[in-house]
Every structure is written in structure tokens, then in C-alpha cells.
Length: 423
Image 1 (cartoon, rainbow, N blue to C red):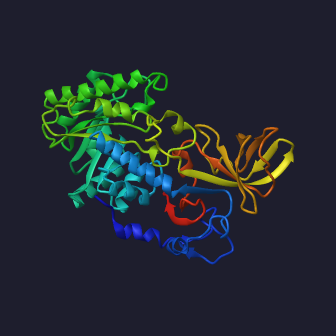
Image 2: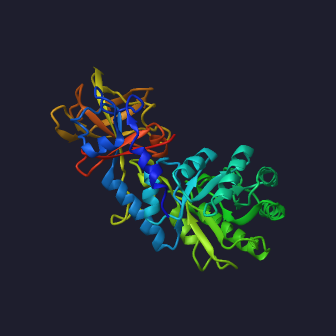
Image 3: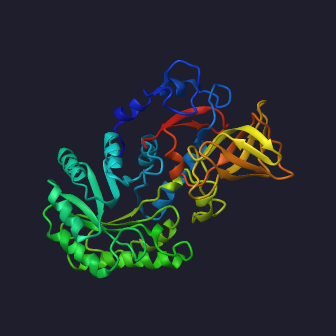
């Protein structure tokens, strides 16, 4: 199920001017389409630092790997679109068989709908009356539009029911004490399910949640396995109680980019034998570009023959060498993620085009527009004017800082496309 091609085509008409950082300077205003067709060189055609790039080969590999992995495990996939908030990447995910796209906020949903996404899973509670009224109109106007969101309280059910004018599918969100949203006990889950069944506008469609914020989740995978078993048990309990009587299928959904193997192990056909067909839905999103640190460390796909590749790289330039053992490059908190680890120096490119590994270099801290780079005594030479490639940690907080991102080919320098984000 694809998207609105006409809406996607308008992205190519975007004027590339002062609004987009890193783009070539000193040229007349052009468009994304013209720049893409020109196949510009990242280093020779006027791009300026700092500049975030997306490596085409790694991106394609990651998209195809997750699509095939989910299919092999019998899972539908609704990748979390909040990671890049890029319609062009959503289209590629849908072309590879994604069931739909996951959203986090009503504004995300509105953007998805503008670009024609027909199946949206909102991984959040929704009690905002204007958003509910808008969604009612969207659902009424387009019978093919499928929308699902969380509920985790009777009060939330009441607010939704009061604002809606069209029927909406919801899933009871399962949480845990000390985690993020979601019901904490079986009794609370049953109470919310009963409230949905008694409402005028809501239809109970399944159970879901997100395992990534469970207490002690990083220390013990057994925590996730136990929580997933509870999610499956909740689906069975609801089904036995007749709570899914109005649904034509039952969704059971979980999964970020850290524990999707445990989600697959729990959501098997054998484990979910219910009264209606089951949509076993995975929602991983950060896999799309992976990273050089955080997700590289925690991903469950570590086999040499099957693993994700880091696809984001940021180029910055050395602007100062004020002390021995210290270099300053022109990329800081406004340009790179830093919530899950500082950038990792990967390569040095000299003004003559010589590439070498950034051995002995470490980013030690960031200011708004600078990174402090420490040089070990045996570090690779680094001079003012050199470009430094930085690997990043946490794609979600990398994408949000860039509205137009050059996608480069396998040669690392030919720009083949420009990815538009909407943060």
C-alpha cells in the first residue's frame, strides 16, 4: 500500500535556499529535483559544513533487512516514522511491504495523511479534542483509512468518546510500574477494556505496548520476556471475555529496535490462538539508519551475515587548533545528537581529497556549534581546513536537526537524492 505520489512529487519542487543548512552557497535558488538530477559532488560542488549525509547503500540494506526479517518471523511491520519523519523513507518502507507507519503525535498523523499514508498506528494516548474531531472527519471522508491508538485509562476513554463523531479503533496499552504510559495491573486493563466496550465511538481492536521503557530493561532481557508473556496473556483474557466481539481481527503489538527478537519469540502463531485472525505487529523504527554507538551496541542482530549498517554520517571542518592535543570542529549540539553518546570520529579528509582513518581522535564535549576533539599523542594528523567525518549515536535526535539531507551513493561523494524531513 503506497502513498500519494503527487504529494511526494511536490517535495522535488522544494526551493533549496537559505532555509536549509549545509547546501551549496553562492548559487541562484534551485530545486531539489534539479540538484538531484545534477548528481553533485559532496566535496567539490559547494556544500558547506556542518553537513549530515545519508549513505544510500547502508540505508537500502537496512530497509530490506528489516522487511525480510519481519516477514520470515511472520510479523507485520509498522515502522515508527518519528525516527526520520521523512515521507520518502516511509514510501520505501511501504514498498517493501510495511503494513503501515507508526506515529507518536497528532501532528505526525496529519503529516502522514497529507502524504497519503492509509494505515497509521499511533503509539500514544490521544485525548486532545481538536485532534479527535479532525480524525473523525478523516475517517468519515476516507473509508480505506485505518487508524489505531492507545488507551490506558477510563478517563481517557471518556474524553475520546465525548469528542469523536466517528468510530475509532483502540488498543489497551500495557505498561508496568515505573515505566512510561500503559495500565499497570490486570484489573486496570480489564476496567479500561470494559469502558471501551461500553463507549459509543470506540472499538477494542487489541492490546499493545512498548517494552523499551520497562524498569531494568537494559539489565535483564528476562524483564522483556516476562512483559511480552503478560501482553499475550492479556490478549487471551480479553478474547475470552468477549472484548473483541466487534473486531474483525485482533492486533497484538510491541517492539522497538532493541528487543524485536523477543517480540518475535513471544508473538508466534502458536502463542496467539484467538477467536479472530491476529495481526502480530512490530513497530521498530531506529533500524532505518542504525547508528555507530547506541543501537550498534544493543541491536539483537549481531551475526556477521545479518546486521544493520550505520547510514548517517556528519561532516564537520576543523576550524581551530588552539592547543596541542586539541582541535575544534564546527559541529555542535545544534547539529549532532548527544543524548545517547557523543559523536565518534571516523575519517579525515584533507583539502586535497586524501582520506584517512581518524585514529587517536575522541570527541570529549560539545558546545552549541563546536565539538572539542582530543588528539592522542599518536593520533592521525589533523589540520585547520580538514574535514572530519563523525559517526553518530541515536538517529532520532540526529534527524530532528536537519530538514534536508543529501543521500550519497556508495562512492561516498555523489549525491543521488535529498531526503526532506518535517520536524
